[in-house]
Length: 222
Image (tube, rainbow, N blue to C red; front, side):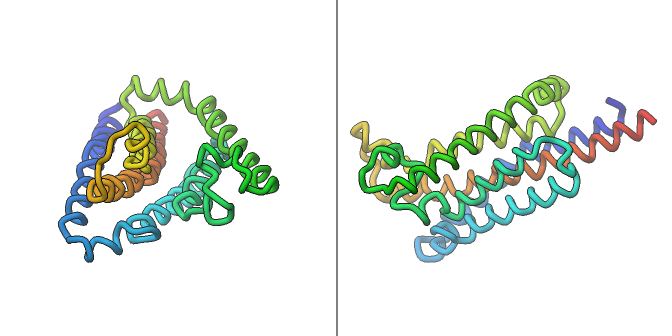
Protein backbone atom coordinates (compact mmCIF):
# COMPACT_ATOMS: atom_id res chain seq x y z
CA UNK A 1 0.00 0.00 0.00
CA UNK A 2 1.46 3.36 -1.02
CA UNK A 3 1.81 6.37 1.29
CA UNK A 4 -1.50 8.11 0.53
CA UNK A 5 -3.75 5.02 0.83
CA UNK A 6 -1.83 3.97 3.97
CA UNK A 7 -2.52 7.30 5.66
CA UNK A 8 -6.16 7.16 4.62
CA UNK A 9 -6.44 3.61 5.93
CA UNK A 10 -4.95 4.67 9.26
CA UNK A 11 -7.45 7.54 9.46
CA UNK A 12 -10.37 5.18 8.85
CA UNK A 13 -9.03 2.72 11.43
CA UNK A 14 -8.83 5.55 13.96
CA UNK A 15 -12.55 6.15 13.32
CA UNK A 16 -13.10 2.40 13.83
CA UNK A 17 -11.50 2.66 17.27
CA UNK A 18 -13.16 5.94 18.25
CA UNK A 19 -16.71 4.98 17.30
CA UNK A 20 -17.36 2.68 20.33
CA UNK A 21 -16.18 5.46 22.64
CA UNK A 22 -18.46 7.97 20.90
CA UNK A 23 -21.42 5.61 21.23
CA UNK A 24 -20.61 4.97 24.89
CA UNK A 25 -20.35 8.73 25.41
CA UNK A 26 -23.77 9.16 23.81
CA UNK A 27 -25.19 6.53 26.18
CA UNK A 28 -23.64 8.16 29.26
CA UNK A 29 -25.03 11.55 28.21
CA UNK A 30 -28.51 10.13 27.60
CA UNK A 31 -28.53 8.26 30.90
CA UNK A 32 -27.37 11.36 32.77
CA UNK A 33 -30.45 13.25 31.55
CA UNK A 34 -32.65 11.54 34.11
CA UNK A 35 -35.71 9.27 33.69
CA UNK A 36 -38.13 11.76 32.12
CA UNK A 37 -35.68 13.53 29.81
CA UNK A 38 -34.04 10.30 28.60
CA UNK A 39 -37.32 8.54 27.78
CA UNK A 40 -37.82 10.18 24.33
CA UNK A 41 -34.33 9.02 23.42
CA UNK A 42 -34.48 5.34 24.38
CA UNK A 43 -38.14 4.37 24.21
CA UNK A 44 -39.62 2.30 21.38
CA UNK A 45 -39.43 4.38 18.17
CA UNK A 46 -37.48 6.99 20.13
CA UNK A 47 -34.63 9.18 18.90
CA UNK A 48 -31.93 6.48 19.11
CA UNK A 49 -34.02 3.78 17.45
CA UNK A 50 -35.17 6.07 14.65
CA UNK A 51 -31.60 7.29 14.25
CA UNK A 52 -30.56 3.68 13.72
CA UNK A 53 -33.25 3.29 11.05
CA UNK A 54 -32.04 6.45 9.30
CA UNK A 55 -28.45 5.17 9.32
CA UNK A 56 -29.61 1.90 7.74
CA UNK A 57 -31.30 3.98 5.05
CA UNK A 58 -28.10 5.96 4.48
CA UNK A 59 -26.14 2.72 4.14
CA UNK A 60 -28.59 1.38 1.56
CA UNK A 61 -28.33 4.58 -0.48
CA UNK A 62 -24.51 4.58 -0.31
CA UNK A 63 -24.34 0.90 -1.21
CA UNK A 64 -26.60 1.40 -4.22
CA UNK A 65 -24.81 4.56 -5.41
CA UNK A 66 -21.16 3.76 -4.63
CA UNK A 67 -20.94 -0.02 -4.82
CA UNK A 68 -23.64 -0.03 -7.54
CA UNK A 69 -24.67 -3.52 -6.49
CA UNK A 70 -21.53 -4.98 -8.08
CA UNK A 71 -21.29 -7.12 -4.98
CA UNK A 72 -24.02 -9.46 -3.81
CA UNK A 73 -27.49 -7.92 -3.51
CA UNK A 74 -28.06 -10.01 -0.38
CA UNK A 75 -26.02 -7.50 1.66
CA UNK A 76 -28.55 -4.65 1.22
CA UNK A 77 -31.42 -7.14 1.58
CA UNK A 78 -30.00 -8.25 4.93
CA UNK A 79 -29.54 -4.62 5.98
CA UNK A 80 -33.16 -3.90 4.98
CA UNK A 81 -34.39 -6.79 7.12
CA UNK A 82 -32.40 -5.45 10.07
CA UNK A 83 -33.91 -2.01 9.48
CA UNK A 84 -37.41 -3.49 9.44
CA UNK A 85 -36.63 -5.24 12.72
CA UNK A 86 -35.79 -1.86 14.26
CA UNK A 87 -39.25 -0.74 13.12
CA UNK A 88 -40.72 -3.78 14.91
CA UNK A 89 -41.94 -5.45 11.72
CA UNK A 90 -41.06 -8.79 13.35
CA UNK A 91 -43.89 -8.35 15.85
CA UNK A 92 -46.28 -5.71 14.46
CA UNK A 93 -48.14 -7.94 12.00
CA UNK A 94 -48.17 -11.28 13.80
CA UNK A 95 -49.73 -12.73 16.94
CA UNK A 96 -46.33 -12.66 18.64
CA UNK A 97 -42.78 -11.82 17.62
CA UNK A 98 -41.39 -14.18 14.98
CA UNK A 99 -38.07 -14.08 16.86
CA UNK A 100 -39.58 -15.93 19.83
CA UNK A 101 -38.61 -19.59 20.01
CA UNK A 102 -42.20 -20.68 20.67
CA UNK A 103 -43.65 -18.84 17.66
CA UNK A 104 -43.74 -21.89 15.39
CA UNK A 105 -44.94 -24.23 18.16
CA UNK A 106 -47.69 -22.06 19.64
CA UNK A 107 -51.29 -22.99 18.90
CA UNK A 108 -52.21 -19.30 19.19
CA UNK A 109 -50.35 -18.45 15.99
CA UNK A 110 -52.33 -19.03 12.75
CA UNK A 111 -50.81 -21.30 10.12
CA UNK A 112 -50.53 -18.52 7.53
CA UNK A 113 -48.45 -16.44 9.95
CA UNK A 114 -46.11 -19.38 10.49
CA UNK A 115 -45.77 -19.87 6.73
CA UNK A 116 -44.95 -16.21 6.09
CA UNK A 117 -42.56 -16.09 9.05
CA UNK A 118 -40.92 -19.28 7.80
CA UNK A 119 -40.29 -17.66 4.43
CA UNK A 120 -38.81 -14.61 6.15
CA UNK A 121 -36.45 -16.80 8.19
CA UNK A 122 -35.43 -18.73 5.08
CA UNK A 123 -34.59 -15.40 3.43
CA UNK A 124 -32.59 -14.30 6.49
CA UNK A 125 -30.60 -17.55 6.62
CA UNK A 126 -30.00 -17.45 2.86
CA UNK A 127 -28.75 -13.85 3.02
CA UNK A 128 -26.44 -14.58 5.96
CA UNK A 129 -24.95 -17.62 4.21
CA UNK A 130 -24.67 -15.83 0.86
CA UNK A 131 -23.01 -12.77 2.40
CA UNK A 132 -20.65 -15.03 4.34
CA UNK A 133 -19.67 -17.04 1.27
CA UNK A 134 -19.24 -13.93 -0.88
CA UNK A 135 -17.27 -11.79 1.53
CA UNK A 136 -15.38 -14.30 3.74
CA UNK A 137 -12.22 -14.80 1.66
CA UNK A 138 -11.88 -11.15 0.52
CA UNK A 139 -12.57 -9.98 4.07
CA UNK A 140 -10.00 -12.38 5.55
CA UNK A 141 -7.40 -11.15 3.07
CA UNK A 142 -8.29 -7.52 3.82
CA UNK A 143 -8.04 -8.15 7.58
CA UNK A 144 -4.54 -9.55 7.16
CA UNK A 145 -3.59 -6.37 5.30
CA UNK A 146 -5.21 -4.21 7.98
CA UNK A 147 -7.83 -2.69 5.70
CA UNK A 148 -10.17 -0.39 7.64
CA UNK A 149 -13.31 -1.54 5.82
CA UNK A 150 -12.67 -5.14 6.85
CA UNK A 151 -12.21 -4.18 10.49
CA UNK A 152 -15.38 -2.09 10.27
CA UNK A 153 -17.15 -5.26 9.15
CA UNK A 154 -15.78 -7.13 12.18
CA UNK A 155 -16.90 -4.31 14.49
CA UNK A 156 -20.34 -4.42 12.87
CA UNK A 157 -20.62 -8.15 13.61
CA UNK A 158 -19.46 -7.62 17.21
CA UNK A 159 -22.08 -4.90 17.73
CA UNK A 160 -24.75 -7.18 16.30
CA UNK A 161 -23.69 -9.98 18.67
CA UNK A 162 -23.64 -7.67 21.71
CA UNK A 163 -26.99 -6.15 20.78
CA UNK A 164 -28.55 -9.60 20.47
CA UNK A 165 -26.99 -10.70 23.78
CA UNK A 166 -28.40 -7.64 25.59
CA UNK A 167 -31.84 -7.86 23.98
CA UNK A 168 -34.18 -8.90 26.79
CA UNK A 169 -31.22 -9.48 29.11
CA UNK A 170 -33.36 -9.34 32.23
CA UNK A 171 -35.72 -12.00 30.87
CA UNK A 172 -32.80 -14.23 29.86
CA UNK A 173 -31.19 -13.96 33.30
CA UNK A 174 -34.50 -14.63 35.05
CA UNK A 175 -34.79 -17.91 33.14
CA UNK A 176 -31.63 -19.12 34.92
CA UNK A 177 -32.65 -17.72 38.29
CA UNK A 178 -30.86 -14.35 38.26
CA UNK A 179 -32.93 -11.26 39.07
CA UNK A 180 -31.35 -7.94 38.02
CA UNK A 181 -34.23 -5.60 38.86
CA UNK A 182 -36.18 -3.12 36.78
CA UNK A 183 -33.61 -0.30 37.01
CA UNK A 184 -30.76 -2.47 35.72
CA UNK A 185 -33.04 -3.94 33.07
CA UNK A 186 -33.80 -0.44 31.73
CA UNK A 187 -30.09 0.43 31.89
CA UNK A 188 -29.00 -2.51 29.75
CA UNK A 189 -31.99 -2.06 27.46
CA UNK A 190 -30.92 1.53 26.79
CA UNK A 191 -27.32 0.47 26.20
CA UNK A 192 -28.55 -2.16 23.75
CA UNK A 193 -30.32 0.54 21.71
CA UNK A 194 -27.12 2.59 21.48
CA UNK A 195 -24.98 -0.44 20.60
CA UNK A 196 -27.38 -1.39 17.81
CA UNK A 197 -26.91 2.08 16.34
CA UNK A 198 -23.29 1.09 15.81
CA UNK A 199 -24.27 -1.64 13.32
CA UNK A 200 -25.36 0.65 10.46
CA UNK A 201 -22.69 3.21 11.39
CA UNK A 202 -19.97 0.61 10.85
CA UNK A 203 -21.71 -0.48 7.64
CA UNK A 204 -21.55 3.11 6.39
CA UNK A 205 -17.90 3.39 7.43
CA UNK A 206 -17.05 0.13 5.65
CA UNK A 207 -18.63 1.28 2.37
CA UNK A 208 -16.96 4.71 2.44
CA UNK A 209 -13.56 3.28 3.42
CA UNK A 210 -13.77 0.61 0.71
CA UNK A 211 -14.64 3.09 -2.03
CA UNK A 212 -12.07 5.70 -1.00
CA UNK A 213 -9.21 3.21 -0.54
CA UNK A 214 -10.04 1.36 -3.75
CA UNK A 215 -9.98 4.61 -5.75
CA UNK A 216 -6.69 5.70 -4.18
CA UNK A 217 -5.04 2.35 -4.84
CA UNK A 218 -6.33 2.31 -8.43
CA UNK A 219 -5.07 5.84 -9.11
CA UNK A 220 -1.65 5.00 -7.65
CA UNK A 221 -1.40 1.86 -9.77
CA UNK A 222 -2.32 3.76 -12.97
